Length: 463
Length: 166
Image 1 (cartoon, chains in turn cyan, brown):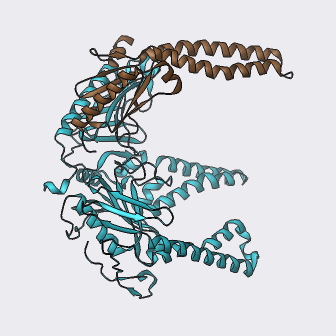
Image 2 (cartoon, rainbow over the protein chains, first blue to last red; image 1 turned 120 degrees about the horizontal axis):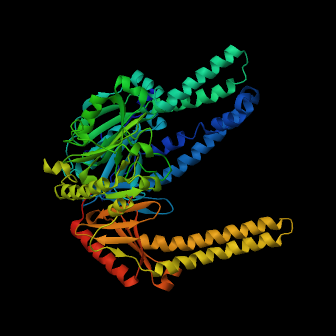
Image 3 (cartoon, rainbow over the protein chains, first blue to last red; image 1 turned 90 degrees about the vertical axis):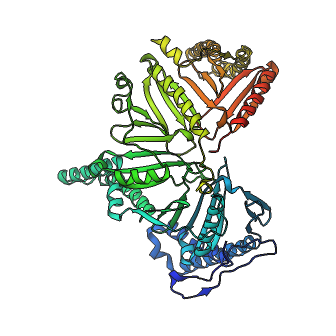
C-alpha cells in the first residue's frame, strides 16, 4: 500500500476542512483506522432521539411542544457521545496490516481481544462502501470476505475514500498473486443502467404490475359505484409494491458496471453508494431472469452465486447477488461473458423435458429443458417469468437426482447441480428418469474433467 | 415403468446397503416418542370433560400411525445405499421422494462421523459429507462404527488426493 495521501474530510458538507491521511503505523507495520472514525460512529446516532419521537409521537408531532423535541435532541447528543467514546476505545485497539506471509491481519477488541488472519488466496470479494453518514465525512467502509462457512468477513470502519481504495487494490493485487505495490487497476466502463429504465423495469415486474393493475381496478370500481370503502384496500395493494419499488430503485440507482484487471466492478446506490468487485473465476453460477412484461423491451436481470456471498450474513441481511438489475439481453450476454469467459449461451443445444412433463407441471412443462456444452451446464424453466440457470462444469459441487411420487408415476426425475449458497438454483425439472440419470452421470464426468484443467484461483499470476 | 425409474437411482456394482441394526435403533426411538403419545391418549380417557368417543378415536389413530411408522422405518432403512466409485461417492435414499446424490471426492470439504445415544448402544453410526454447497446433503446412516471410520478415512484420503479450489 502506498503512503497515505492527504484527503479532504467533509467535502460533501462543503466545510473545506483538510485532514492529512493519518499515517499511524507502528513499529511492526500495523495500521490504524482513521482517527475521526469514532466521530463518524457517534454522528450516526445523533438523530436517534428525534426518530424515536417521530415513531412514537406520530402525527401528533406538532402538539408535542418544544421541550420534548429539545429533550429528544439532547438524548441523541448524549447517545452520540457515548457511542463515540466507546468507538474511541475500539479505534485505539484496532490494527490492520499485511503480515510476512502476505495474509491480511486484523487485531481488534476492547474487552475481548480478537486476532484475525485472512488468507488472501481464498479471497472472495473486497467492497468499499459509503454509508450515508460516512459519506458526509468522505469516509468509507472496507469489507473483505474470504471463502469460509461463517463469519469469514471483516469490516474496517472507517478509512478515507482514497485509503479505502488503496487498501482494496493492495488486497486484490496480493490475492491475484501480483506484487503488492501494483498501481490501481484502471476501470473501463462497460454499461450503466439509466434511471428511467431501472424505474420502469421495477414497475413491470410481474407481481408488481399485477398488484398495480389490481389497485387501479379497485379505485375505478370504487369511483364508479360511488362508495369509497375499498380505498383502504387500494392503499395496501398499491402502497406496498410502490414502497418496494422505491427501495430497490434507491438501492440500484445509477448501477454502473466497469471492467478492471481485478475483475468486474459494480457501483450503485443513491443514499448509500456501494462498490463491489467480482474477481474473475469467483462466480459460481448465474441466472438470467425474464419477467413477462420485460420481454417487449428484451430486458433481463442477471443474478449470480459468488462463493461466500449471497447467503445470510451474520446480521441476517440478504446480501448482494445481482450482477445486473436490468439490461438488454445483448448487454447482459456481454457482461456474463466477462465473468464466465468463453461461454456461448446462444449456441446451446437444448434437450427439452418429455411432453408428459406437462402433466406434472402444466404451465412451465413446455419450457423445461437442460443443455450442456464443453464448459457449462444450463437449465431452463418458467413460462411467465423465464429463468435460465448456468453453471460452469468446473464449479459443480455435487449432482443430485430427485423424484417425487407424481414424477415416479410418470417416470420422470429432476437433476440438481449443486452450487455454493445463493439465489441461483440449477435444476433441470421433470426429465425422463433414465435420461436424467445419464445427464447426472455425464455432468459428474464433465465436472471432473473441468477441475483437472482449472487454473482460476490465482488468475492474474497466469497472465 | 417403475422398474426403469428404479434403475435410474441405483448403481449396478459395489452397491452397499446399510446395517439392519438401524431399523432397531429407529424403532426404539419411535417407541420412546410413543411413550409421550400413550401418555396423551391416557389423558384423553382420564379427563372427565372429554367424551369417551374422542378418546377411542385418538387411540385408534395412534395405533394406526404407530403401525404405519413401524413398517415405514423398515422400508426407509432398506432404501438407503451407497457406492464408492473411482472418483465419486453415490448415496441413494427415499421411498416416496427418491434421491440420489453424486459427490466427487475432490469436492468434499469435511466428513462428519456421528452417533446418538441409541445409535451408540446398538453400534450404528452416520457418515455425512459436506461440500461448499449447502444443498449437497449426503449422509449415510446405519454404518457399523469400524466400517464408518474406515469409510471416513478412505473418503478423506481420496479427497486430499483430488482436492480442488472453489
